[in-house]
Every structure is written in C-alpha cells, then in structure tokens.
Image 1 (cartoon, rainbow, N blue to C red):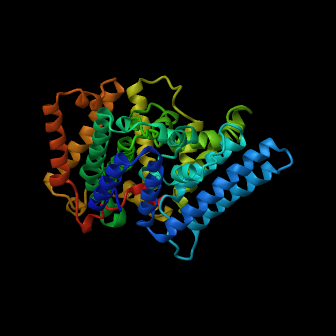
Image 2 (image 1 turned 135 degrees about the vertical axis):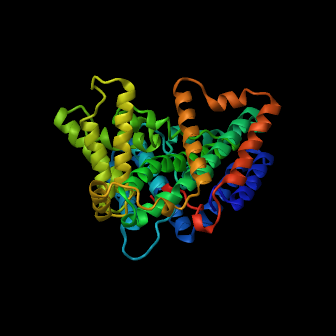
Image 3 (image 1 turned 180 degrees about the vertical axis):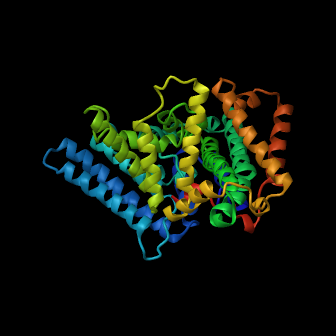
Length: 456
C-alpha cells in the first residue's frame, strides 16, 4: 500500500476520521491497529519481524533501566546482546542468500530501536513501561517504511501525551492546512518529478552500453534530482499525514544541494540518519576528541557503515568511503566564493550518486570507460521521453531549485501559500491536484508504487 495509491488514500481517510471521533484513551489503540494493518499489507514477514523487534527492544529497555538502578544486573551485557540481536537480524535479512525478501522498513525501525536502547542505557531517556506506547513508537505508519528515524524524546514523548490532548487541538485548521499542503507537495515531488526522471535514468543505467557519454552525464545529473524528490517527497507525505494526526515528525531535508561543503551536505541530507550516525556511532567511537588521525578514522568508519546500511553491493561501500574521505579533506576552509564551493560540492555529490546508482562496480567501470572514450550523444530517443515530457522534467527541476533557493534566503513557499486568502489557496491546491492527476506518471510500465529508499 504505497503512499501514492488510491488504497492508501482510502485507508488514511478512514484512519483520520476514526481518530478524530474516538475519545483520547482509544486513539492510541486505533493508531496502533492501523499501523499494524498497514505493515501487514506490505507482507506477513514484515509484520512478524516488526512485532519481534518491538517486543525484544521493549523488554531490553526495561531490563537496562533496572540494571542502572540495581547494579547487580549485567546492564552492559544486556545492551551488547540486544544490539547484537538487532545487527544480526538486519544483516541476515539484508544479505541472506536464501531468497527471503527484506522486510519493509527494517533498516529504519532497527536504527530507531538501537538509538532508543542507547539512550536508555546511557541514562538520557527513561524506558517506556507501557507496551502500547512503545509499539506505536516503533510501528507508527507514516514513518514506518522510510523514516524519518525518530528519537524517543520527540515521537515517544508525543505518544505519551496523546490522551491529554483535546479533540479541538487535533482538528486545528492551521495544522490541517499545513499537513495537507505537505502531502500535496510530496505527491508533486514524487509523481510529477521523480517518477518521470526515473524513466530515462532507468533506461540508461540498465543498458548503458547502448548510450554515449552525453546520455550518461545527463542521466547522472537527473538522478540527483530523482533521488532527492523521491525521498523528500516521501518524507513530506509522511510528515503531512502525521501532522493531520497531531504529530510532528523530524525533518529530513534542508536544501541539500545548496551545501557549501560535504560536511554541510550531510547536515542537510537525510538528517535523521546523519544525526543518528553522529550520535550513536561517530561520537561513541571518540569523535574528534582524540586527535586528527583518530578523527579521520572515525569519520571513515562512520561513512562505511552508512554505505553498508544502504545496500549489499561493494558500490555502496565505495560510495560511503568516498563521502568519508571527502569529509576528512573537506573544502569548507578553502578560500573560494560560496557559489563556487556549492558547485564543487554538487559535482562531487552527483559523481558519487553514479557510484550509488549503478548495479555493480563492474557497471561503474564500464560507464566511466564510455565517458572517457565515447563522449557523444548516441541514442537520445532511447531515453524514452517525448519533447513535452522533457519540458516537464526541466520545469519540475526548476521549480525545486527555485523553491530551495527562495527558502534558503528566508522566503518560505508553504508559509506564503498558507498566508493567502481562501480563494487563492483553493486555486493553488486545485492546480497542484490537477497537475498530479493529469501530468503525474502512472501505469504499470513506470512502476510508481515503489519509493527508492524502500529498498534500503
């Protein structure tokens, strides 16, 4: 049940209406039932693994808190054992050769569980004693598939307060407007931009030998916007649906392609993952506290783990290693104008997206060879877009760039839209809905059901 499907629209409307009608104490159970139904629709294995992960993490959290209070309990041993359980389970499903499909969302809720346990073990958070609260924290359906990777101090704290919130607060018109606009923009990012860009990108990357260097460069640049609009689109839909239900999820993107250093890029891209890696891996390894050499090793290890988390191929490991090295030798202190730094960072990020996107290091070698020996336009028609569709791609990318530049300079598009009168807002909403319905990429040939980060 994809966020872009009519089935999800019907599912969410039923969940939302029931949520508004039910009394405070019943809302948690309603949301948990809806979240488990949503998970079960993605496959029985995904549902069972989520249940097991939730129970193990909840019990371990209680044991860890008891271990802090009663020094006789082996808290460190419990912590190490349960972390090993999560890492082994994640590794098994990601790298098994038995043909068992990766349970949807496991990479995200596993990291969320590990972060929760680390906070409890370190005394930064209290263990959740209410199983219903913790189960909803792990399974909350807007963030289940692709995050954001939540923290207990944010989402779990909101879940604990849910019965105290009055119905009128959940029906707050400003929250409904903002959440609805986030959903609409997310659908535009996904269906108008990302899925249309996917057509030429998939054509070239699957049959790169039939194309020249020009097509490879063009689709690599396009892929930067495909993965951004796809993942940011999912995040906006997730945050919008959560807002309609009265929850504020963590932001995941802050204009990443305007970064002026690789370090800055990772403060802006997939923020919930990059902050998780910083807090639960880089800093525990020693961070920058033990000298320059140790700092470099810690950065490289952190980004190699990021590469492994993303996928099983060696090209993911190479992608993570390149970003780690780029952080060690970052350009942030170079005496260059900021626009030049931004361009250099984008070119580096885009080049590494090629490493990320290929199917193997062998394919990467073949594509780089074509760039060096056959830099020409060979089969533009084979990229499978009409002139009109190319125009839509360019307009979509231009809209994203203008939005990000304007937001970087303090002009918020969503804030501006929400500040218009009712007639103007309705006209804008109707235009966005019409564009999604009329110009969105639909049909079995385009496989719009899958968000990119679902596979990770």
